[in-house]
Image (cartoon, rainbow, N blue to C red; front, side):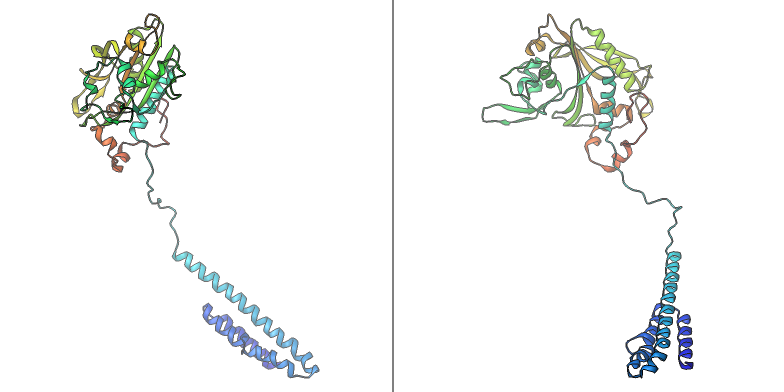
Length: 369
């Protein structure tokens, strides 16, 4: 009994003094391992007489349980202490700001297009769309372009190779073909995607990509355009003037915008006009609604009677007006972007500077971000 008591005291003392898991494991192997001191005592029980086993068995098993319990408790304490040391050494300072994350931006063209659509939607305009690849009839003939008009030439228009029927398609030079498709009455002989005519009254805007063979600081081979069309009875230039002036004030968020209309010529409108807005060009920027200069921003006019006839409408019964605006150019004016080509260069740095957050607060004028 004295030997067991002394052994237990010695083992418990070494367990308590262990500084790490390795030292504790050495004590465990020495005492409870396959050839450990306590394990050897347990093996010797089989050689004892029954009376000796009854006396020594509980004592040896008690020693084994006491040592095993002490080892488990010491191991848990050492593991907790080690974890505390790691946590103290590897602590994260949550007061520091997180590393910046790259986030996507709304392209200025899409932002401006949404703002324009919102303004016209408030004025009662619907939305119409059409194909980018057009035929000669919808892009030119139906819109009263003469056979030798410059727009039909290679240097202004992207023509596609002839198809098997000898027809040459083209990339549309404006969104006006959608106006033709909107006005034309339904015809069962036409494919479904062409026969989308709409009976008057009509009030639609047509946004989309257009293509012209031109490239400089204010022109790109592909750009975005938004056209408007109104067809009804007793429509006149006064309606066109009010529509464009209202749009200009709301889009540029300036109630004091002054406009002027100058006579012009477009094949598909008669009479035709261009609209200028008052601006200030000093200081290397253009400020709308102030100054003594003028800037042309759009064209329009009354829909030509020939266009109405080509679309199946009687010009003696129906009148209307149409107008067209460059989406990218208006964005340049409103948000101070100097070169149109930068919009399509794919430079992430430019987009981070001029782009818009998808979670930006709504614009007070348009209701859009």
